[in-house]
Length: 141
Length: 276
Image (cartoon, rainbow over all chains, first blue to last red; front, side, top):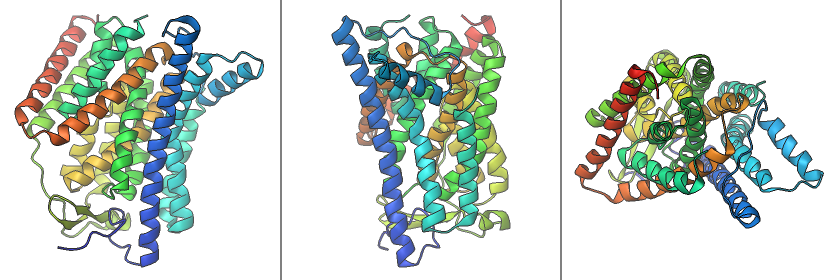
């Protein structure tokens, strides 16, 4: 039986110890980004519901998000909070925003990995294309 | 508006059934939401948001286990994201009727793929020049086999456009379309089943994000509906996945697959009859 190598899931060419070590670290980083992002968003949505229940004895949210992309949604909510309108829907919107940003941050981290750690320009370009397309979709109007 | 008290437990069941059948919760929650009177486009938009949560959650564990191939994922994501944007734009443009029929047909095809899937080992032979240039190869420690499995992907030039189509399906219907993606990875690109499943899981989250962005801008994501669905499906999928790995009896899984078959036929019938 061969010893399982850390980071082996990434590339059979990763024979150099340094690169293998970096790949191992990157697997963990990417994995934890996804896990923590999803957990934060679920906690925010859950907290919004609890806050709503304490305020109104109801768990329903009846506001709509219309004509806004993700960043406009976050900006509107933060602006309202800054004006003193600190409401459960702020946490709800932030929870939805965090959920949507989680895969985006994962791709961003992957690009840093391919550029800075592996210096693999081919995959840096591929990741940049993915990132640019996602950025375009998040700024859709 | 459906109450939280009703939608939350329904979403837990949807996430659980989806996970037990080997698919996501989206394929269950969309038909259920439409049965409860939610417009199919709203149901698709909310489902795609829950797909981000479930796929990212499970992908997290697989990536840390060094099974997921980041390069395969990153290369194919270029195509699935473009496909998801196209699919979501199509959904906004068409009437609900064809969406019901396409949803039912895709669910039926995924059901057949899951039922008759014959897993094979990944390709270890020579690669074509393009796939080799893309560095799409790797190895992973297989706990069940007790050895490191090496593989070399092939036919990336064919897998890429097919993944664009898989992205269209995901964006169009608000589902992960994992069964379609795994089929492409397995049969076209010669990836081992574990690598294709886990890499597909990672791709699903980013693909769903592209589709969700289109639906958010179109005003189809209602937080009041989204909250119980996201939380419920995440909890249900978590419970279902935990139970599935401990379960040895295939009969139970076949029962859940049977539920999916009923949902598929029911959606097609409603589509043919004219939506709701």
